[in-house]
View 1 (cartoon, one colour):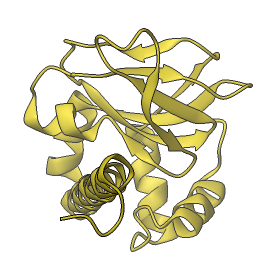
View 2 (cartoon, rainbow, N blue to C red):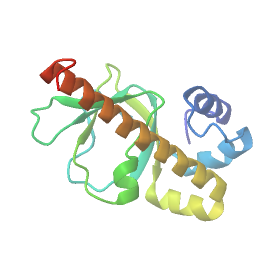
View 3 (tube, rainbow, N blue to C red):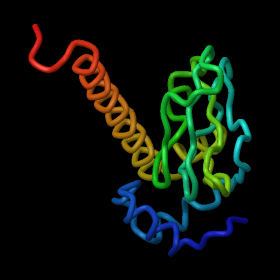
Amino acid sequence: MLSISAEQLFKFFQEHLICESLNLAEVERLMPYLQERQYNRGDVISDVGEIGEALGFILKGKVQFIGPDSDDVAVGTQIEGSLIGEMSFFDRNPRNLRMQASAKHGVQFLMLTRSMYDRLKVEEPYIAVNILENAIVSLDNLVRHMGEDMTALGHYMHGFGRQ
């Protein structure tokens, strides 16, 4: 049982442009496939080397990503309204970053496990495709931001206007 109602989840999706093409009835049908998870600040959500068996929608809080050799220095973050865990979930390769709850009051998110996603693909294919499209958009945003970060780093290291 989730602590969020279908109406609240629908509103959350609309506000954060996640699965925004789902109507309220479709969100109601999605809810039994989801599990709610809470982590306290500093808790490891998933670790380097694990293969993603779930993806999640961050409802509250912030998740930081820690590299394998970074002495607990965050190399990235995701905030409320973000989809997390989609890369390893879909490509089934081991994670190369640790996901850790970083907000003062922890993090709350809805998880979709691989077994529930497999059921969703058969029982509710439109909803499953909608989640897949959101994962693609999420990964696209990640790559775009990484490119912007690399450009900014290049400008910082070499100065603006240098060839």
